[in-house]
Amino acid sequence: MPSKKHKPEEIIGKLREAEIVLAHGGTTSEACRRIGVTEQTYYRWRKEYGGLKVDQARRMKDLEKENARLRRAVSDLTLDKLILQEAARGNF
Image 1 (cartoon, rainbow, N blue to C red):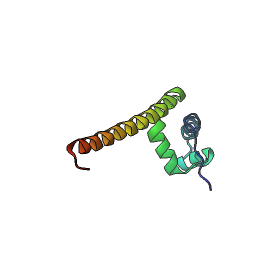
Image 2: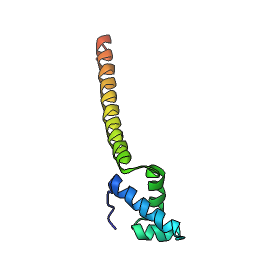
Image 3: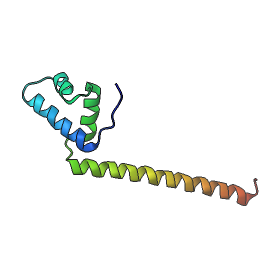
Image 4: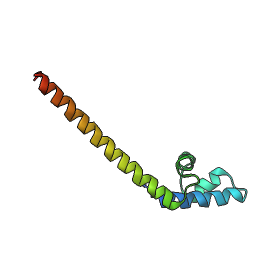
């Protein structure tokens, strides 16, 4: 079965659907079958998105992307600085 990348809005909707099944006395496996994911995926989603609203999840993903971009920029600048320090000492 090919994996599908779910959007945060879809995940939150599916988690809400699962909560309804569980509230009506259903089991976790029934809820997972209903939303079409494995129990492992359900628990991972619940850990990451549980209690979030759609706009909060969207904002969180945007911040994670920005954070990754900034980390790459800092590591690139650090590497440039180290190279320049080595060159200044005449180690090339």
